[in-house]
Amino acid sequence: MEVLLAEEFGFCFGVERAVEMVEEVVEEGARPIRSLGPLIHNAQEMERLGARGVSTIDSPEEAGADTIAVIRAHGVTPQVQRELEQRAAKVIDATCPFVTRVQHLAERAARQGRDVVVAGNPDHPEMIGVVGYAPDNTYVVRDAAEVAALPPLRAPLVVSQTTIKLQTFLEVAEAVREKADTEPQVVNTICSATRDRQDAARALAGQVDAFYVIGGRHSSNSVKLLAVCQEQCARSFLIETPAEINFNDLKGVQKVGVTAGASTPNWLIDQVVERLHKLGQSA
Image (cartoon, rainbow, N blue to C red; front, side):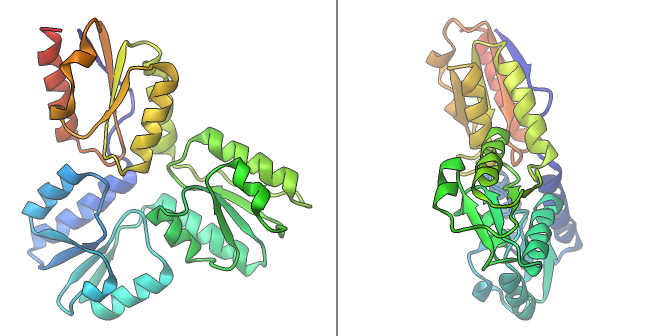
C-alpha cells in the first residue's frame, strides 16, 4: 500500500507562531503560563505543552497576579484582552495575524457606520473575538441561506472566518450582493494556509482509495479538510491519533492519502504515516 502526503499539511503560520511564542517563555523559566482556552485545537499537542508547564484557563478571572497569560491564535474581544492585562503579570498576544486582519477590517467598517457580514460559525472563538471589535454592526452567518434573515444592510463589508471553505464564502458574498441596496465590499479573509491545504487535499483525494485527515474533532479547519476530501474520496476519515486507524477500512486499498489540520504537529503526523506503512504491509 502506497502512502501519499498532500503537498500542504500541518501547522499553519499562526499556530506555529503561537506555539513558538509560548515555548520561548517556557525556556525563559517563567511560571505559571496559562493559555486562555486551549492554545491550539489539538489535545495531543496540548498534553505535550502541559508537561512543560503550560496550563489552560477558561476566563480572565482565573488569571492571578503572577500569571503569564497567553491569548491563543483565535484571538479575543478587546474587553477580554483589557481584563487579562489588568489581572495578569504579563500578557502574550499570540493572535494569528490573519485573524487580526479580520478584527481590524470589522472595526474600521463599524467606525464608518457600515455593517459587516462574516461567513463563519458564530460560536467559534475566532468569530466571538471578531464580533467584539464591532458588536453593533457585525452579523455572522453560517451560509448563504442565513443572509435572508438579516436586517437591511448599510454599505456592507463581507469577510470570512479564516478557516471556512472558499465556496461557502463566495455563496455568502453573492447572497449579500443580492440583498443589499449598494454593492458590498468583499474581502476574502480565508488564510492562505487554509486555502493551500484544502486545494492540496482536494487534488490528492481524487487519486487515492482512502484518505486520512489528522486533526482535532473540534478543529474547524480539520473538519473542513475532511469535507473537502469526502467530495473526491468517499472513504475519508478524520482521526486524532494513529490508534484510531481501523485496519478494516484499508482492505483492498492500494493508495492512501494523508493530510493534517493547521493545529496538528509534525511529530503526530509522522506517527500516523509510520502506522499506515506498517498496516500497509498486511492490508
